[in-house]
Image (cartoon, rainbow, N blue to C red; front, side):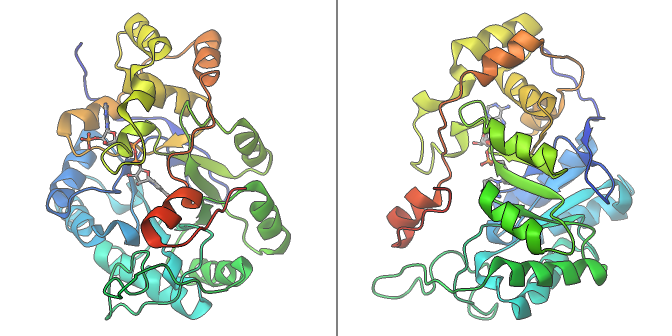
Length: 333
Ligand SMILES: NC(=O)c1ccc[n+]([C@@H]2O[C@H](COP(=O)([O-])OP(=O)(O)OC[C@H]3O[C@@H](n4cnc5c(N)ncnc54)[C@H](OP(=O)(O)O)[C@@H]3O)[C@@H](O)[C@H]2O)c1
């Protein structure tokens, strides 16, 4: 199969903002040493949407890549969509501006297109001088390290996020890993509505009610881990056999369209109205994952992929916080 590069014209409407390119490049677990070159290659391949976060520990390297892109005239700042995320240790209102300024400085930008609250999980503040990024442990060198909780109402963090819009540091603000009840509560109190919700979404975690609710509320929906299990196999949170990319239904549809199974799963995500932000550190997959604009899935193909749903959440704080960070901390139930 030949995969050709095509700058991706697909986009998702975002209220009070320019459209968000429907396919972005995710940077979680991207090696620092690869991040700058990958950023440049991605933009050269047609990507205009970069999904970053303080927690990924590579924003300074992505920033080097962004600077090379902008200095080299590969594209203009206004043609890029750059997202970053407020980490759990910076939810106290007095820390929110500091956190975005650190991300901006690392990314070599003077504004973000989107700033998300990464998780509805509030951890004790860790100063930058102590450790950056802060991660989940309060003190990794403690005898029994674990996450230490803080208690900050989401609306207080949100109001500090709203101030960032007024200051011109971010164009839009949103949320990640929030459930519907929490979004409802936020909508009842906010001045600026969240423009985007970023959540795990793939054919084994379809979340039709969440997507429908977001569409009803004009909140754009970005699917993270859009390929499902592969991101979680190397870190022991999924098994190879849980990969939707090897499911016969997806394989048959891929053969029919002469596309890869990853392209089918990403196309399904975009065609149901979500943005997708696949991560890859391989140049050939950059092009593959972006090249999903030249074919369409039929209604019955869309339906047969959606019915693969197993409600399988790979990235669940209710599981990994206890195993990895010493605290039982469910957020979705
Ligand atoms: N808001 C949040 O809490 C949150 C949580 C998780 C992720 N995210 C964001 O969402 C992005 C994407 O999620 P993710 O990184 O977890 O998972 P993903 O993008 O669904 O999958 C990435 C994995 O799939 C592999 N892969 C990429 N393209 C492929 C292809 N065409 N065929 C086969 N395998 C392929 C990658 O390996 P190679 O690198 O070797 O290609 C990597 O192992 C993240 O990078 C991050 O930006 C956000």
